[in-house]
Image (cartoon, rainbow, N blue to C red; front, side, top):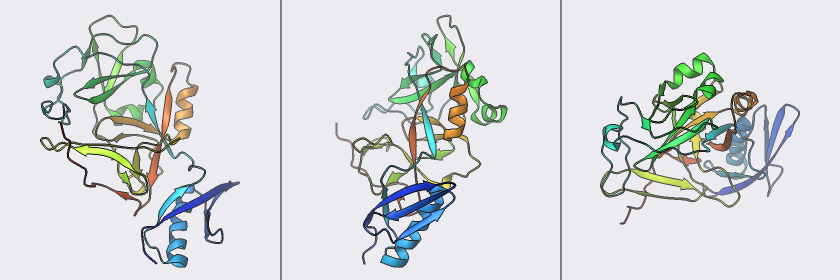
Length: 271
């Protein structure tokens, strides 16, 4: 049998275990304490019974969220020159920037009085900003690892906001089984992409080998934005904190070995 075929898998949680099986052949199944381990085991079963060593899995219903990416619900306007923020100037062809961040403090015109996550856009790159109250809801170790830098506001603000300046912990990957749209700039070589499926909230994916069970709060870079990511349990604790307001999140996809590509070839952007 050929390899790399797509398999529709069903799953269900029984008490403290997850069971995964092929929709077309329920006798091919696997169980484990975690969904991720069960999905890895079903890959082995498919290889053993069907001879496909590189199966692509699609789950119905969608898999349980292993991680969530926090979303901003407000936008702010930058008040200083773009060139002082990144070492690499904005590309004159694609209008984007992906250079290394400078040590210059970010300056905005104003900050929101009733939001905990806002953002500024610089050369089509989105920079999330987090309120002081949101930071206080994090643990000391989380704040230290994320390396927050205060943002300067031209107008008086009811609360301080901060930018994450640490390098991203994880980079996104391309899912083999899901169509994506994207391009590569012929001048600066920047790649931009996204996964899109009807009624699917997951637009970004990471490789399971790039994360560990000990990672509860970390950052994910998708080429356009560095996203703060949490486990569902950590996210719920943050939301329960009365100091935080209106925080929402989208699920982050996690793919096993053989289900993703790290650097696929993208069509060149045409102006």
